[in-house]
Structures are given as C-alpha cells and as structure tokens.
Amino acid sequence: MTEQPIFVAEYVERRSRLTTFFRLLLAIPQFVVAYVWGIAAGLVVIVAWFAVVITGRYPTGMYNFVAGFLRYITAVHGYVLLLTDQYPPFTSDTDAYPVRLVLPPPQDHYSRVKAFFRLILAIPVFIILYAMVIVYEVGALIAWFAIVILGRQPRGLQDMIALGVSYQQRAYPYIFLLTESWPPFIDRRGEELGRGEPNAPLPPGEPTPSGFLTPEAPKTER
View: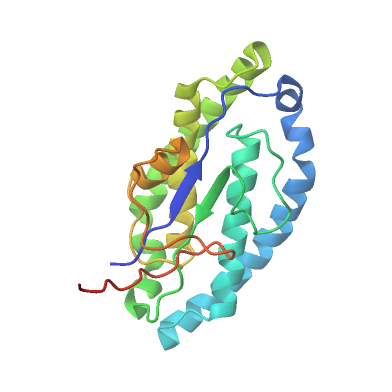
C-alpha cells in the first residue's frame, strides 16, 4: 500500500479584515503563476502517462515537477480560500507555509493497467471532488463575511473549508498519477497536524526540504 499525501491547514483565529476584503485582488499574481505552471504540469502529466503505461515508472524529473506544482497550488488555495492570511510563496517550497501538502516519494514501480484506466478509475473521486468544491466554496464565502465583520475565523468554518480543500488536494496526486490509491474521504493525520496535537503519531518519515515523506527507518532489535 502506497503512502497517502497529507494535507495540513494550521488554524489561527484572528484574521486581517483588510487583506481578507481584498483577497481575490491580492491573489491575482498567484493566479497568473498558477495558470502558466498548471498548463506546463498538465502537459508533463500527459507525457508521464505514456511513460508509466509503457515502462511502469514515473520519470523522477516529471514527478518532481508535478509534485512541486501540487504543493504550490495547495498553498494558493489555502490563501484564496481563507485558511490563512500568510501570502504564499511563488515556489514549491511550502514546508513552512501554514497550508501545505506533503507528498510521498515516487514509487519504484507503477501499475500500467491502473495508469491506463486512471480517468475511468477516478470517476468516484471526481464525484466526491465535485461535492467537496461546493463545500469549500460555501464555507469560504461565509468565512469572508465572518472575518470582515468579526476579524476572526470561526473554527467551524475553518474545518468546513479544510475538509473540502483537503480532499481536493489529496485527489490531485491520484488523478495526476503520483499515487495509485484513492484518497481517504477524511485525512485524520493532516487534521491532527493542523491542530498541533502533541500526541499525533508521526508519519513514516519527516518531510524533506523537497516536500516528500522520507521512507521509514528500519527498526533494530535489542
């Protein structure tokens, strides 16, 4: 079983009324970068599809490029959808950003059959994703009014938005062939990290500067 991506959204109650009011305007430069990067990533995924179907391997350079885009766009979604006030970087280096996606390293071998039929296999994911987009859009709209009026983000709205964005960002690696398993409906591990729970179990490794999970170190017997 492959390691699943982890979505993290750290919660801060107090928010800026001013930057929230002008959020879409402030995010215009991010939209431009995301659009251009997204086109390039889409083309890379098409080429990677042929590579996986023919060789059973996802070329490392292509994997890193697509993974970098997913980490970047996760930060952008977090900012635009009011999960954070911190302006996202124009890079894939989002390890220190409050809203981030931690991805597993590329697999040694991928199923050619699963890759070939990925769009068909992903139909249930697309259906859930459609519903999740509605969930986070409604949550973000209500949160916009709440923050502009109250200057704070209600925890319930934060969780509502994070629920939808989490599924979306964890579904993309499956759709883009980075992973082979359907994303779980709820990311409990990411929720615990977002809340900063001290007793949350660690993943099989720590995120590296490239945003991947390192393999689990072998246990030694005493």
